[in-house]
Every structure is written in structure tokens, then in C-alpha cells.
Image 1 (cartoon, rainbow, N blue to C red):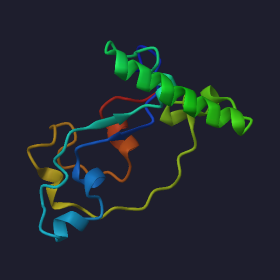
Image 2 (image 1 turned 135 degrees about the vertical axis):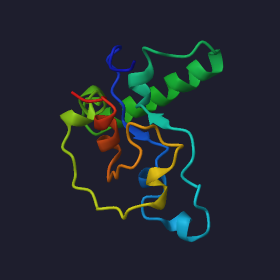
Image 3 (image 1 turned 120 degrees about the vertical axis):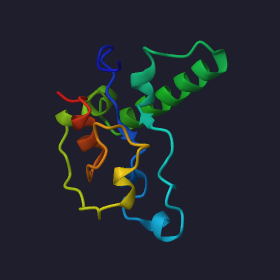
Image 4 (image 1 turned 90 degrees about the vertical axis):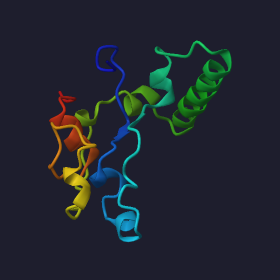
Length: 133
């Protein structure tokens, strides 16, 4: 949907054990289901303006956050859209650490398309599910 309206995603926090407990910290602490949370899509505030909000106080907060973000780039002598209006495949990908195999990778909570697969970065899941160039 966001591709259709040309709004790049900053990051996606997938409900997948490699993303929410990638180094098994919570699993080792006795919380094997810690990773089972909602997906969270993060979008820069200035990019979300075209979508907006119908609730006035949320729209006002969005406008305020977008203004602060854009002003921050202006102070640095940069153009906000050049930094925020990029899809992840348009930016340089830093190498990622290899995450250990998580026992939850085969959990039925995970959609079949990615169940049983191991990921080191959120972008790998996005690619596998079709969100790519």
C-alpha cells in the first residue's frame, strides 16, 4: 500500500524471533514468546503527511513532528526529502551481524511464507514477502 502512494518505510519491526529477540536474550531469560508482538512500521513524519490523520490532535502532532524533522535537516544544510524519501534498496546497506538460530523460527505464529526461515535484517523479510524494488 505504501509503495502505491510513494511513501518509503524507514524500518519494519517484524513479529519474528530473529527481529524481536535476535540474540536470544529474552529467550534465555525464560521468555520464549517475547518476540510475539505486532508488526510496527516506522515512517518518517514528513513522509507520512500525504496520508495524514482524520483526528485533529493526531494531525497536529504529525505536523509538529514533521516540521521538527525537516528543520533539523535544514539546520544541517541538508534537504530532508533526500534523506527520508528513499526506499531501503536505494540506500547503502550496512553489513549485519549474523544472528543465531532462534527456536521460535518454526512457530505457527509466523506466516507460512517465512516460517522456518532465518533472517539477519528486517529487509530480508521484506524482500521475501515481496516488498522490494
